[in-house]
Image (cartoon, rainbow over all chains, first blue to last red; front, side, top):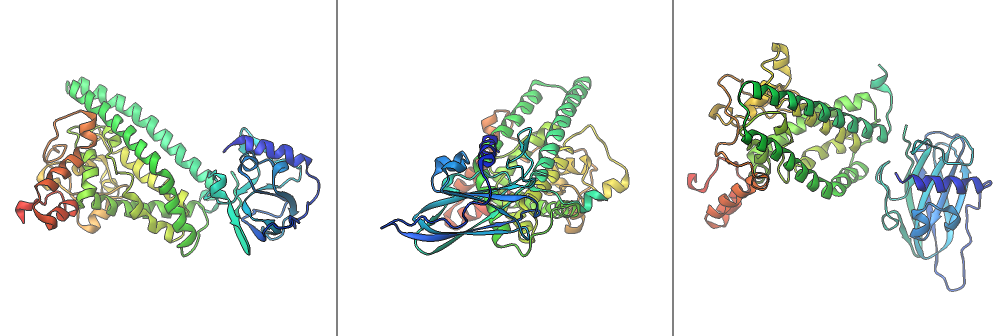
Length: 155
Length: 291
């Protein structure tokens, strides 16, 4: 795994406060809008919080840089599952990266380059898959889109 | 036992695979050193054997190159089936690993039998059998498409809900077990072991070009599949290693493509469309003349 992804995510995570808006108002005059639902499954417990970032361009996605994400949020977990709908999205491609901050310390914890907490990327086939933005993203035009993301843990 | 019921993550399963790959390779290299020393003491050492051994590892590099190129499609196929066509998704624990190894061993038996009896299968697998020697380096002698045919035979494991990483671990376990059988330095083992398990003795038979040893002992880990499906032969007469038409070369390119050279010759010799199609699919002992 690209460790820098998680390190930068951890830094950004520290800056994050409580839950951001789950519904993002991106409506602008003349811009086509639609909704995207992100379904996060296999969260291994309800501890801590889950942090989700939605990316609309590959540079921020590659760096897992939540500051440059289209939207980012954090949420409590219920029933090992999280479902978030973003509405009024401008037409674009979107990909999601999710972290499970189990100990609520605001950081994505790593040890010797290995994640100690859960992570998930849209379009990833398995725990060691690092999809490109092209593979991770879905096109949101008009209408409703859904992407499913499975969480993975090293141990 | 903890191992049987404890659940493992995908990453841990992958870690197990890397671990067994690593330790078997280390052991095999040490064992190869012992075998070469043994042959030297027995005055059976030759430059041809050394060249053949080096060529075995060169085919390994070429084989890994092919596998690396198709890895994305290989992994993708298993996950596609697992996520879309599987009847269930079984929990990843020790029971699943043991079950997967047994099922992968059966799948390997049929895959291996197919590689010997299907024309294009033999075109790639003949490389592995083309060495006139039998030491652990022969286990690393591969043909160009040896990594492709296993997909077909192991995808059913994903259909019944075995996670692809567990399937890959099981495939590796079967392959690595068999790696250790490529030696003349170990005689027959105690009878119960020879009855149930594949052994160096059984696998020497598999590599024999003696008439009675042809197309026998396809097993990976358990020899019982050969006993059940009627392809078992006991090691009696001294084994003559290699293919029925010896390739007489240690040139790595000639070796790596020897099966396809054989296939091309057979394909060219076949007259008419129907015979040419037969040349691609029928067993290696078929030739147009016998028709």
